[in-house]
Image (cartoon, rainbow, N blue to C red; front, side, top):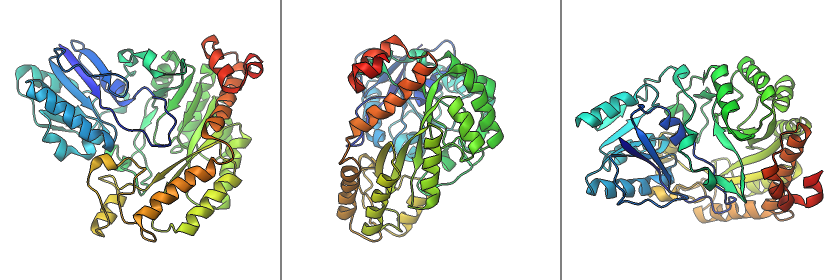
Length: 422
């Protein structure tokens, strides 16, 4: 059976650096498919769909709200040709009712142990409109090694070099952050994979650089420290979401190859200042993730926050505006207060204001988003800051003899021949 798995194109943030990471959801999903299924994967961000190429069954994997409109268009085209379409992924779960209007079937929840049922139904002509497993999560031990073999690897290079591969060591999140849908999607229970399985998958990835995409590594101290201990012999270099702010944890993370973290910076407190310093003291870079437009944000407080980011010497910063995605507390609150201004999902890109802020006009918040980007990078460009962060990882790789020759030309291009050859 020829199954075409499609990842719809989506617009990057206007100020994001233009390189493409290999998507995680589709390769994890592909690992759950029955053995008789042949997978043909298309990342529409980098490839063109040939709708005339015959296929038995189509799956559309949607991660982001800004993908859904395009995903529906793709499905409509195939269905007009008589090809049945299955939807899955995070954005499918957030927009299930609308997506069902464009689908033969939608799958909600985690796919491990469930795809045999779906494909048996397809073969027998008895596909159900909805396979709802959101509240019936599978045993986390069933999570297998992602099918990275379905990727066209040459497409995921930046100037000829593979940047990072994505991997996860846990699911679920015990936190319940205001703008986040993870508690709806993956539950409030922290569910770590067996560490030996997670480590085996990391070891098998033919790339020294990883992005550990777990919602947060800072959920269980004993598990986190054991994971890092087991990662040390791999000599991988990796980035992740937050690491627990304890010296013993940060020390192990550094030994395990921590390159940089994505850390939310939500105020100008000494706690945030000291936390960033502790990362840096352990040789771990920090990309600040800064959300603008919360109800306690005024124009003055946003400007003070940007000044604070420069003081604490973040390695990089990425700015977004509050976006009320469905199934979040932010959506519920703003919807009840009649403050949501747009229901066009293509506007939900996190760099467009789609709600009425409390202390300013939507246009002013949009202007302050531009102000934040421009002010933070006015003395040193985003490319230069990225080059410095890249230089850090090359130094780490050289120190433990894992710097690969194929990376050397990019190192020269990024920060000069002398440093690259050192």
